[in-house]
Image: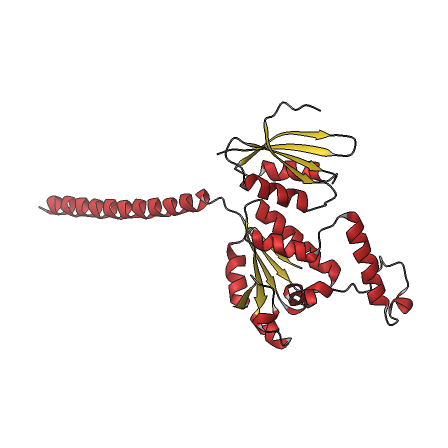
Amino acid sequence: MATEYDVTTTLDVKGQSCPMPVVKTRQGVDDLSPGEVLEVLATDSGSVSDIAGWANSTDDVELLDQNEGADVYTHYVRKVE
Amino acid sequence: MSTDASTADESTAEEADLAALRARVDDLEAQLAEVDADAGDDQRSMTIIATKGSLDMAYPPLILASTAAAFGWDVVVFHTFWGLDVLHEEKAENLQLSAVGNPSMPMPNALAALPGMDRLATRMMQKKIDENGTASIQELIDVSLESGVDLQACQMTMELMDYDDEDMIDGVTTQVGAATALEHMADADVQLLV
């Protein structure tokens, strides 16, 4: 599926469960410059709520979108500031 | 004459009142500035006291700690008593699950108390952990340290258990006691005993 976001890096955490999707997303965002977008591919069904909650209370990130595919949850996180 | 004198007294008294009031306002302004400065510090922090060294109980503190670090929180996990085993280089790789006294175990306590049952229960759990893609304790320790979590090992219980600084995983803070933990707890937004 084509995305409307200009993805800088893709992080694959398929097969990993809590807390790794959030922890690795944080590390992935740390490697980005402001404005860049991280695409996160996860199979953990809790990652939808977890990444949303994390992004909501974290200053330097903005959650752009979350897609629930057949087997994979895709999250788009932009680094701000 | 008597009227003049009382007027002078009154104005002196008024000046004194005014000076006291000004001093009070200055005091309050200083206090307000302090409160504002504190409020501006939105860094959250969490202290967890980790006292358990079984495979199942080793997880919650490390999962919360690594996640809180991802939130940008300042996190200390103070390990004491059996919690020290989680930071012990050799023991951390061999944490066991207790089969006895665990109602979720698919076996009665009389059976669970038999020799070898803890090992069996641990193997079953380890298999589930692997199949589920759950992070290992080692992975969680690594990721916690990488993201700035302060994993502390209580000095008193280290001596009690005959553990040396060299026995502990690299990156663990040693030579600390209850006062160090309390100092962090006093300022923490979240304090947990596990």
